[in-house]
Length: 472
Image 1: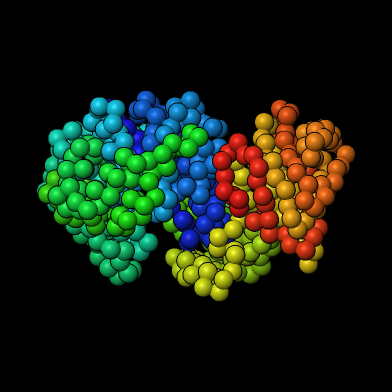
Image 2 (image 1 turned 135 degrees about the vertical axis):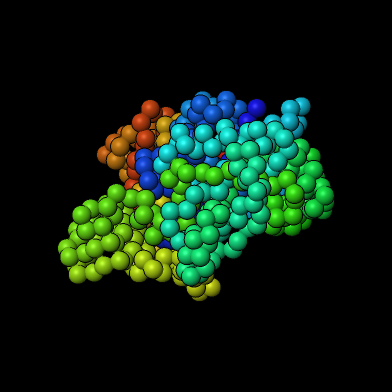
């Protein structure tokens, strides 16, 4: 049996300002109407019937649950395992392996990052099928992407002697500079490191026991002491955070003799930069890839993404222009890998833009700030059908709600009443209140907040079906 394990903990800093800490790239719809996570789930159809194990950061639990809810039944039955902190891939896979063994089986784990794009899913599935024989013999199999050009944004894998449909894994090679990348391509025995694996659960744990016994011990404790929370499984925080942070490449694959690699030629990209996003897009005659309201004149070989307003370019080439409601990025395509340096500078300066997204997602829906001042803030709020905010009160602000679409059920102290389209209501400071959508279409409303303090942490919750902390 093939047991999918989806690693959903990436941050995607090189895709800022689209990708943020609160909304990393695996949840974005970058290449189709489906998010990268949802595309990863679709990729499994016809390959296995086992519901996936999804390893995710606890802060993203409702994002994962909502995107799974939109998918097929197999994805909806996924087991969502929450990491209190990121500890890289080796511990995440170890916890998934331990959980997979609990049912009494010893499945082959198909480990897939949630933030990759694959253009040829048939070729992907054929490569997985070819890897099964090696994995059943106890080999830890990774997939090496057949390179199409010298690439400095990927690590490389050196292939050794032939082994079944693949090769013995000879060495991992760090991301090279351009000269080194060209030489690696010329050698002909190197592949891009995809970060995808097929390995038997017990085989991986045996190698981890030999090479990283303390890591495995911490993971065992984290799984044994894990607690169920609604539809999630929370790994024990004390045990998991005591675990060393390391990748499967460094912790295991580089040091074991039964590591193998299967070639993958399936139009793969990890979408690790805007230049990669440009390369998989559909260019116009001048080599430009655009999204949104973009007007280009005398522009060539550029990526222009307009999320919120018109973006116009004139007389430029080889640029990345990305516009969002709160930030604009302009960069040369040759410097796409360095966007993460900008994010580090913004973080060091204490800016909120690397972390928070203009559209903030909650388990009941989402909201987006429209305007703000010293004592007021205006938001556009969407509550999905059946969504229900917590029973709460604010100590520093009052709220005015204007319904623009759908019907709201509003609780204010002891009163409960409906507010329909083009109607409004007022929530005084200190009043117990709740907002619900009892209908079958999304509820859209405009909220005007006024008061001395307008922070999201000014929430005192009394009842919440989602069991959240005060500022979630």
